[in-house]
Amino acid sequence: MSEVKRTDIAAMFDRISGGYDLANRLLSLGFDREWRNRALCEAAPLPGERWLDIACGTGDMIEEGLCTEPGSYWYGLDPSFGMLKSMRERPRLAGVPRLVAASEALPLRSSSFDGVTIAFGLRNFEDRERGLREIARVLRPRGRLVILEFLPSEQRRWGFGTLTRLYLNRVLPRLGGWITGHRDAYEYLNQSSRAMWIASHLHDVLDSAGFTAVRMQPMMMGVVTLTSAVRA
Ligand SMILES: C[S@@+](CC[C@H](N)C(=O)[O-])C[C@H]1O[C@@H](n2cnc3c(N)ncnc32)[C@H](O)[C@@H]1O
Image (tube, rainbow, N blue to C red; front, top):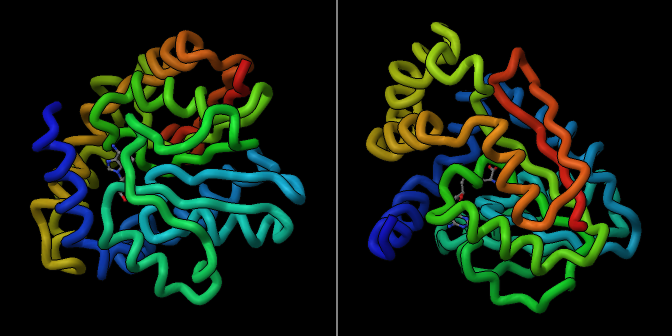
């Protein structure tokens, strides 16, 4: 993907940022909260730890992180200014530092975080390998990475499930378009889900990016996968 593409993606998220939260709740039938909750149980932030939520969007994961462990420190990073602006409007997140940046070039010191979370953002990375190497760089040794993503498994690569396909192809673009007024954005989200790596490939890339103890837990019959790994 080119630099133009990265700008396009950020601009697309800028456009839908106003209706994003409502669309998220409705399109996931409210399950997105449960998925984030499971991710944070896996992440298990401790008091005083520094956590970075990459592709933080409007800050759902950070809000959940602060509920899970109020003594942890959270930072949000996203290339979409519009999404970060919506995050700022949430009273509980007013004091959370926000960085306008992409995962591929993190403007952060090496080994400066105890943990990183990414919820439904990995598929948008312009260069996923590079993004994951950057994440390994900013994590301290034994730091944790937790990823939530629509990640097809090997067996389901071409048979992702008739219902899931029908939902992604037909329902998501229409409903997402109706709520936010930007159907093109939800068509992109559908395409990006289909273009996502299979689970075993993500496992391999994490291994070579410097992670160990990679664990993948399919949720909701494999529609969403919770991946966790530790910086070697
Ligand atoms: C589907 S939203 C997910 C937002 C949030 N994490 C959530 O769970 O609701 C994907 C986010 O990825 C961000 N994004 C796009 N390209 C990115 C990149 N190269 N690096 C980091 N984030 C990126 C978008 O701006 C958008 O906010």
